Length: 411
Picture 1: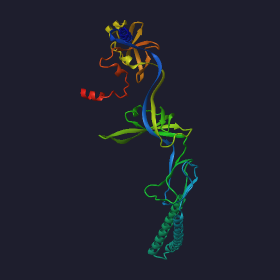
Picture 2: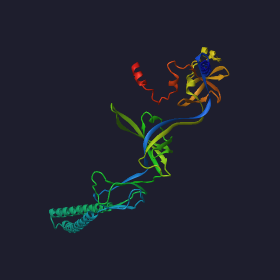
Picture 3: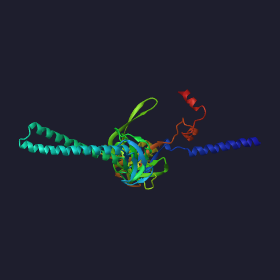
Picture 4: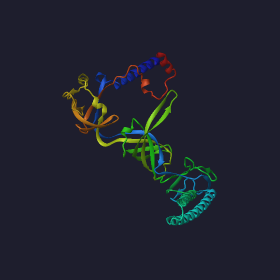
């Protein structure tokens, strides 16, 4: 008896569960329904993403034009320096010796010049009185001109030697912060074809810039003055604001190689200004950038697919809807057709659209806020190949054991 009651109870539960499933999952008439949406005001935006490097706005590399040994360093990393402040000195022994030699040569050439000048003056007087020959006068003139050229050359060499001695005293060219020191005391530097860099000084770290590499497919949408937001890995929860200041016309090519091929990617440098009052942004940080190429606030928008909606009279009749009038054909240039719903009646309206962003598009005229639109006729019948378990399973969860094997076998 108890077993019979148990069986009856189980059957009753199954009938109730089946009934609930039948009525709650009952499809709309004909197995489809009409998707609708209201005209509303929204903000739309389009963006371009890129990566870049945070850099100081003004950055000066301080070097030396003379070769020698670094004798003293008066500045280090992160030191704040003023323009004209002494930051390093080079060994001056050789330079002072060169100065003494140049001074001696200058004195000698000056003496020779003054002697030849007087000799030339005497020879000129005697030549005018016909007391010396042409050859003697020309010799006096030649010696005078030669002594004068040597004296001028030694004066120029003296200026160069003095300037080199001045270069041995290295001062800061700007007010700023030292962000890099490339030498140590006692190190020898050689000023050959390239000026060796001793320090790198940033003018003002409260004003930074981001040099972003924007792909050639996106650069056409980027304009000066556009708003930019970016993040850095050092502060993942902070969003920094900036503005596009410059789009550099020169492109840069970088080769990226994979295991199977090598391709060349063309990008353009975009300079973005960014305030840094808290000094959180450090030079050389990598920035993940979002450039807002389109921003429209409080505009009338409709779903983009509402513009592609084509009514099916038979299907709409099954759902209880009627079509008030056919759409205008052909559509005027620059116009699009949408279908509004008033009760159970669909009516076409010709609208002018503007900017689009994803699945929303701006409507400039032709429709009012709050109007209901027909968006799509969608099926409510699930695919027979999709089980409840597969419907509810997350796409990121691994399948049951053996599922991949079975799928491969099916192929």
